[in-house]
Image (cartoon, rainbow, N blue to C red; front, side, top):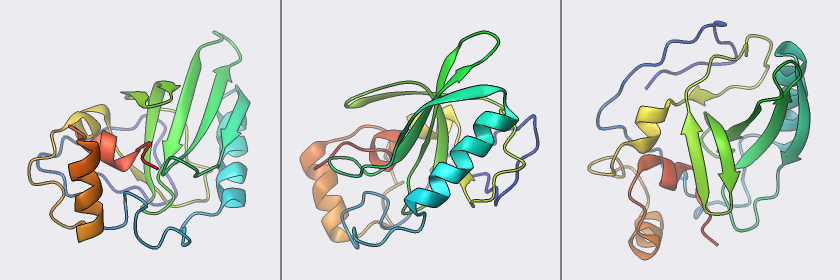
Length: 165
């Protein structure tokens, strides 16, 4: 996994990682009142990302009811392309997406300028998020494993960014 703390080169290079290990507390089912990333920190970072990448911020969603992630929706000013940034506030996993509809996130690779972002994050690429769960959930707590058994996700992305209630 490529760990990027606070700054990213403009043209990011994603690292293919096999057998990704998902961190404890990723699902949001332990210590849910505790969040590493505050709503205000996320909002400030999102508006900086929009400014740095010539994009309008259309939506910032920090409501964790029924899901374990924050997201922001952008529209690029020149080509009007819509894109999203999602982050798990418990583990700081961050990803790009082309679409977010309840229950489904379409992940993509991108290379937006994040060098002025002041929050810490771990950037995940499309391949990591689409990787199967085989061996990737060993570090999770038992109640998180119980949720995985109940919801039956198939990929790392479905666990890291979930719509479980």
